[in-house]
Structures are given as structure tokens and as C-alpha cells.
Amino acid sequence: MGVGVLRAYKEFLPITDATPMISLGEGDTPLVKSNRLGKELGCTELYFKLEGCNPTGSFKDRGMVVAMAKALEAGSTAVMCASTGNTSASAAAYGAFCDLPTYVLIPKGEVAMGKLAQAMAYGAKILMLNGNFDSALFLVRTFTSRHPVTLVNSLNPHRLEGQKTAAFEIVDALGDAPDFLFIPVGNAGNITAYWRGFQEYHDAGFSRKLPRMMGFQAEGAAPIVRGEPIANPQTIASAIRIGNPANWEGAVEARDSSGGVIDMVSDDEILDAYRLLASKEGLFCEPASAASFAGLVKLHRQGLNLAGQRVVCILTGTGLKDPDLAVSSVASQATEVEPNIEAIEAAALLVTAKS
Ligand code: AN7
Image 1 (cartoon, protein in one colour):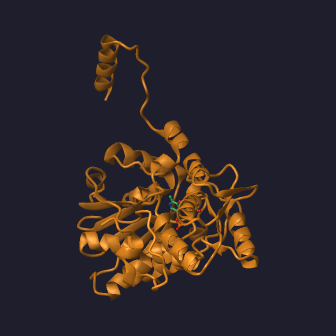
Image 2: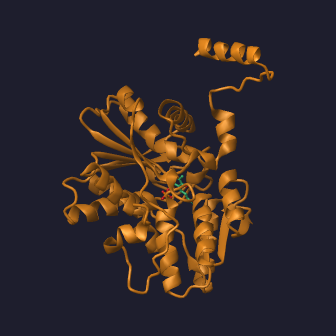
Image 3: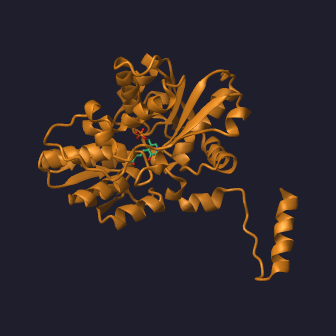
């Protein structure tokens, strides 16, 4: 418990005697059983994997710790990534921990405030690009091919090795793989990593079944669903505003060999799911994360029978990453009150009567 991903799953990771066993306490995140929303969907066993509980508030830490450890082992002197926000926050944190200078290339005006604040606080060298994530990824690939700087996007194979440990934790917690795994898809590294993790654990005899992999893109940024790159991807879920995913083939392979789907959800469906998770389950995730649950709601509406099925939704990042959106999009209103008990009583009773 709490030993970090490298120690917890050493035998499944590319670790040698020379690998520094670093940790910021990543992994071992809660798998919470739904109290209300599962019942509404006729699903008796619905769970949420709270990846926002990782040290920088997203699942990226699982892969970043492996990528950084391997970079240190290889004698790297700097790391770089392109990011819609969470990868840069994670790279910056582990870079600070390891004393490795960290360069992050982010699309100007498209990264949620909490993520930008993290990269700044951890002391990353931030390059704001007048362009989108896809052009940022192309540029860091080019830069790191020309200079002795380690790329820590999920094109770095160590990233996916670390991220697959979330699948191990789910099987460890449930005693088997779930029937369905719902997950947001952006650059498509995570769905690729989960599928690998479920397969490896299955091959090692830790699970009897394999889940159907249910990946969800945002409607305005759904290249895999549409079958071609999107030049100008748009969605309120800025984390998955990606038009040409680096791990496209991995996502298709996960879908096809698991009997799953890669589908899309609209921004309205994402926001509805985001509000429901917070107000009916007490789970505050970021909008991109809510795409997993939005996908479950969509398929349920289309007639998918969830009776007797064990379902896990991955909530990839915490809602605190994007406070502006939270304040502008939630249902509850703040009531202004004078500092006396009569005013408080009047206001509180009014609120109770209303709800
Ligand atoms: C909260 O940080 O791509 O399909 O640069 O931040 O593995 O890309 C983030 C992606 C889902 C999609 N949920 O995962 C980045 C970045 C959240 C995310 C995804 C991201 P992938």
C-alpha cells in the first residue's frame, strides 16, 4: 500500500537493478462502488476508478514515474512533452522530484487553469504554442529526435507500461476483470495501456475474463470514430481535444480484440455526466473524465442491458483541474447572507424547502 507503482508491480515493469525506484505515491487509487447512479442505469455493480487521487490529480503519474525512472537510468539530462495539461503537470512534478529539467509545450489558451498552475509551481519550462495539441506533439517529436532530450509523451513506451498498472489494481480489487471498462479516449495511450494490463494479468492467471473495452471520444474530437484525423478538434473537454491520436492503432486493437467499441459523446452529454457524478455520487472529476460515464449513459439509453454486468468507469482526472468550468456549469447557486442567525435560518430553510 502506498509504495508507488514501480515497487507494487515490479515484475510486470521494465525494471532492472539500475532503475531508481522513485515514487511520489502514485497508484493504489480508490475503486468506489456507485451508490446512486448505477441503480438508475439498472447496473448493480458499477464502480468508479478515481485516478484523480494520484499525486498530481490524474492517471498520468502512473506512466510518468516509469518514464522518469527509465530516463534517469539512461542518464538523460532533460525531458520534454506536448500536453493538453495533465501530462505537463505530471512531467513537471516528477521532473522536479528527480531534478531533471522539464520542457512542456502546450497549446496557448487551451489548457485548464489548474494544470497550468501546476506546471508553473513545479518549475517546468513552459512553451506556449500558437497552435493545437497535435502540432505541439509533432514539434516535440521533431525536437527530441534532434536533441538529447527524452520525450515523455505516451510515444515513450515506458509511459504505457506504467499506465497498465491501473488495470492490475482493478483486478486485484474485484478478484477478476470487470465485464465492461468505460474510458475516455484522447491520445489513446490509456485505453491501449489498460488493454495490455488486463491481458498480461489474464495471462499470468490473475483473472478469468477480459473486459470489453468501451472508449469514448468527444464528438468534436473523434478521429477514431470518424476514421480520419480531425484538423481542428473542438470540445469543452480540453484534455481530450486531440485530432490525431498517437496511439490510434492501440485503441483500435483494444476495441477489436475485446469486442468493445470506440464511440463518441457530445459536449452536452459530457457536461450532464460531469454534473451527475458530482451531485449524485460525490465524485468531482474533470470534464474529459466524465466522457467515460457519459458513454455508459449513452449506451444504456440505446438499450445496452447492464443487469448482472460488472462495470468500471475510469475517472481519469480531478475536477479541481478546471475550476472555471465547474463554477460556470454547475447547478447550485450561492446565496448571499448577512452575518446574523435570522438571515442564516431564513436562507437555509428556503434552500431546504426548494430542494
Ligand atoms: C483527464 O495531458 O493527452 O487517451 O496531454 O488528461 O491516454 O490520451 C491528456 C489526456 C483522458 C485521454 N482524461 O487519455 C495530455 C493528454 C484526462 C486526460 C485523457 C487525458 P489518452
